[in-house]
Image 1: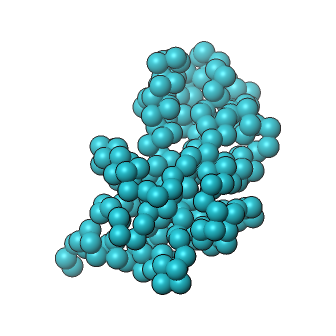
Image 2: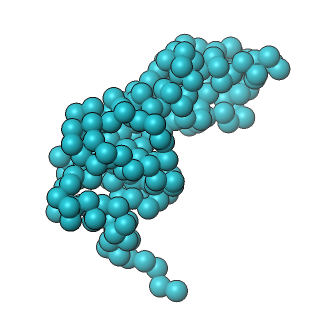
Length: 209
């Protein structure tokens, strides 16, 4: 079976959700998050609107895009966007309200300036957004705008975790991005947590140390 071209994949990714909205004269905004699962670092969300005549080839679910390509697409998307904003919630905020509520608040923060758009959101429901909202399961695989948002959120968070690695080199944040790898868990047990760790995520690990 021949490999799908990037143009064909782009057309497939806009067919179900974005194109009908554009046909109705609506703006399609994508929202996604990165960092719900890590033991350390923030959860980061992004909301983005790319005009239909400025779509970038190569956009896909950020988990399926190699790091160097993600960095390149990030720059291209930032240039092409008519709207882009990120929302952040810190480990302390996550601990205070739980990861789902923190993610929702960060999504609302990212979308706050895109009044009147129709928001395509990766799976999360119950959001208070300045326009209609369609939650889509596995949205970053089937919606162009959500995939674009996933790249913005992923690159933004990864860059921050690499910066944190300079401040807390013992945890390997540049490599693990705060996720619970064996290396990270071993360091956590040896050195204890830093202010960037989510206490609600690591209690069980430290209890068994």
